[in-house]
Amino acid sequence: MGKGYSSEEIREKLILVLEDSETGMSGVEISEKVGVNRITMTKYLKVFAADGLLRQKNIGNVILWFLEPGQESFNFPDDYFKITSKYLENLVKGTEDQVYSLVRNCIHSGASVNSLILEVILPAIDSVNELYDDGKIGTSELNLLRTTISKSLQIFNQLQVVSDPKKNVIILAADSKSSLISEAASSAYHSDGWKVSHLGDMSPAINVLFDLDFQKLIGKIWKKKPGLLIVVVFSQTSEGLIFFVDSITPIKEKSGKRMKLTLCGKTSKKSKINADLISANLDDILQWSNTTFQNLK
Image (cartoon, rainbow, N blue to C red; front, top):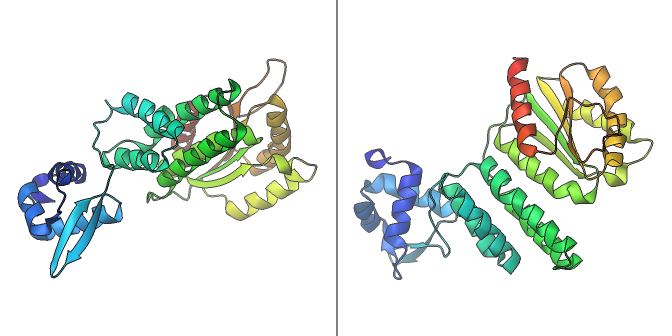
């Protein structure tokens, strides 16, 4: 990389160089203004074009580069608070393209995926649910906003991460209301290098045959039982948690100490639920999972 610049620094310089250019610039012009040699700059231009930051236009033998609309640079960790309100604002306005551009701009600016999930996405999910509970939006808009959040999470899932075959996690929701937060958890685990099996809303599978069905799944995805397998269940009710705990616990006991059960949701004080960890905080669950894996070594 030119003059010791990081990829993020070159991205910021590119935005400054191209943001006011209506006619575009050639690779030679850009390399001179950014201060990176032409060959190296050409490689970066192609990478940033693939990431959606730039577009190119061929005019004769000359390739001109343009900045895609909606590109911004941020400074993290200082800008997380600003992004939280900006993401929700774009989301509620229904400007999907701006929502996705904001997420990509944050990633390109060096934001941590898990920090974005914990500090931006989860508060947005809570805010959308509050708008619905308060009668400010209807079911149709609720589903639209949830879909937009889901697509935001898919951007994180598309990032290339080398997963550790010894870090295995199965994530499921006991009800439809918990499906989006379970999806957020899957993206966070993916970012941490876990091999994620996301089952989504499993409420239709609540029946007497679920334990057999789940046992077959574990036999496929954790056949040789490498490393650790954590099952994370999300639920809005104690009843949902109890059903899946009762179904999964016998399988866990047969599988030994390398299989763990974690629960995230509401539990009443009267309900007796046994699990390796019960928490309403996703951050706590992620930290516990990584610590448990480290202690296994």
